Amino acid sequence: MIQHMGLLRNPLYMDVANSAYMWAAAGLVVLLVIAQAGLFMRRAYRSGKRMGMSEDQLKTGMRAGMISAVGPAVAILIGMMALVATVGGAIAWMRLSAIGSVMFELSAAELGTQQLGYSLGDEGLTEVAYANAVWVMTFGAVGWLVISGLFTPHMETVRQRIGSGREALLPVISAAAMLGAFGYLATGEVMSGSPFTASVAVGGLMMLALLQIADNRDIQWIREWALGTAMIVGLFAGVVTEVTLGGLW
Image (cartoon, rainbow, N blue to C red; front, side, top):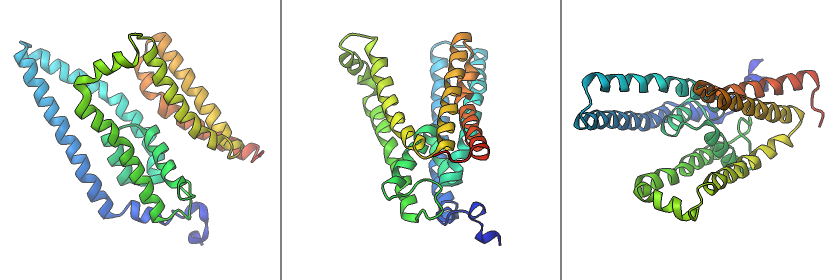
């Protein structure tokens, strides 16, 4: 009986997403990330020694860094639940270990499936559509790695040329690009029905409110938890709308 209940049956592509082969492939990437982190920590420690920092200062700095990383890690873990439910645990683990942006990964995966006429989580989503989503997530982040790896020493010169010497113009350009990208993605959800509209509206308002509080009171942990909290509140708002009002359109 349970097999014939759509709400309780996983989409077929999830068998591939959670296969042992996928976990093994993802594990190789995560091991590389861990190795890089260890290399950076060792170099930072040696650089501190060359700068004349004491052993106590170095240990204090490393401890402070580890503690400050807990907040963002937990916030990413909360947002990771949405990614696990749509692309599987292995890919979610790999992508967030390498990039750490739930918003980007969800957006990229949705774009990848949309090109073949599907949406994330669809019961009929094929393995090809799922593979397309994973490739978009992967290639979509390659540009960041190439730019940061090859052109970081020259970025200050590029930054000054783009802004033509006007420092205030650079944040405007970045904000406009982000608003355009995520506005395009949110529009499709808003038009899907009243529960989706409620999720987008309430989640967006919650994000704005949390960031406003964090800025006004200079509370860093609120910034770190803002995304995960807004996602959960937005999802809850969508469920409440569906239960109480149903699909108004």
